[in-house]
Image (tube, rainbow, N blue to C red):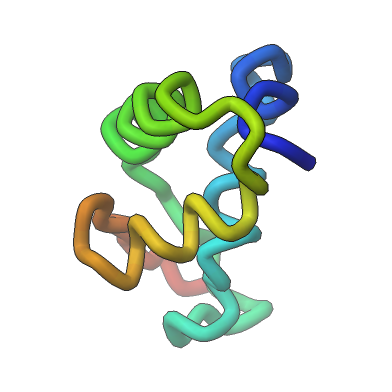
Amino acid sequence: MKCNEFVTTDEAYRPALVYWVAGVDKLGVSEKDRLILDTAHPVDEVITECKKTPDALFMNKVRQMYRNKQITLNKTYAHN
């Protein structure tokens, strides 16, 4: 998926795409945890960057932004 495709994706799916690409599973999330995500800020930042480089690969853009601490993925756990 390229950045221009992400920008045109229904906004209901954008947070899931950003978190999947950033590798939530590598952030210590257990299958039994219910995760409450603060998604508005990271998604808006990714959209802004994607609009600057529409032909860039979405996956590479998100991972680069996460590694460079341009976006943070806030998470809160509610254990079952």
